[in-house]
Image (cartoon, rainbow, N blue to C red; front, top):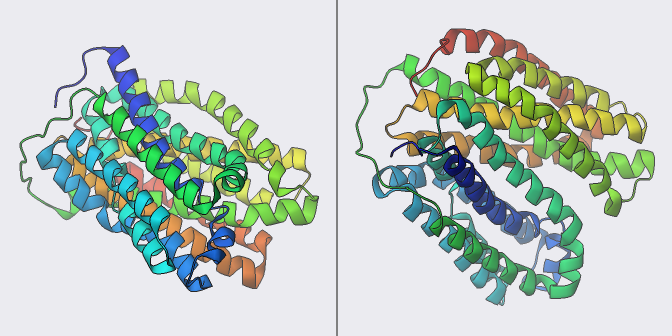
Length: 391
């Protein structure tokens, strides 16, 4: 697939793919805050089936990232993106029409089958110059962050207005809008599949990045399992007001991140970011565990989001570089698989730690693990990533 000749074309592709991923993630995030309460009226509801309906989406995403990436290497990126968004829209219709919890779970399974995160990242890597990839990946990451923040503001009002069936139907509308956006993307043709010789050494950088994104999303999910309760319990900060903390700190972190991304893209120094960004995450989490004032916590959230956004921009760019130009969709699918597994592990682990040890302990432990991984990655990246890589 040729590199897009125009910088404007690269930027347009980045925002288009960001919109596709954001619409899909918005369909997920809008459901999460209200599902377990509103699904109680569905015939056959039990807490176990409710939890399965929530979690099975992420499980299917994790299982199918690599198969979808493999298909995109052979069919082309755009057809597979259309297939994924089509499955997401179909699943929303099935879930909205379900007359039992088993039907609703089946609809969520179909929704989760649209595993396109790795395909979208491979598409972005195919069509952008190496020095612009960190910014492109950051734009895609910011779309995900923006959909999360929008869902926090809109979820409860929309649920009250539409009900659970209407909210599930809305996810289908978002899926169709995503398909329209996909049709506006340039390129997306399949590449000839070349089987490259495999070696343990060539796989090490990819596995390092897969484990790193697993930890990143484990910690992110754990944070949002634990932090709301701390804000309500320690600071009497009402849940409906939490977006007032998250939104401005996310925006501030993006403004701080942009000059770093520009420097990183020009010098191709993404690997240097890993230990420093994990160090920022670790420090922010350990201090957040102390439960300082809201003002201090806002400052710490800026530090946390800065580290998170830098990693979300740097790591996919590194994956694209070490994957090379052949079989890229499958390799980026492996990366996305660990991303979704991390979200699942963070939710499960965060809940267990919160129940048995408290939120402060959970955040402090996550911070210590991030600091340890940052120290390890300083050595690993020096060994696994030479100063220049094939693009």
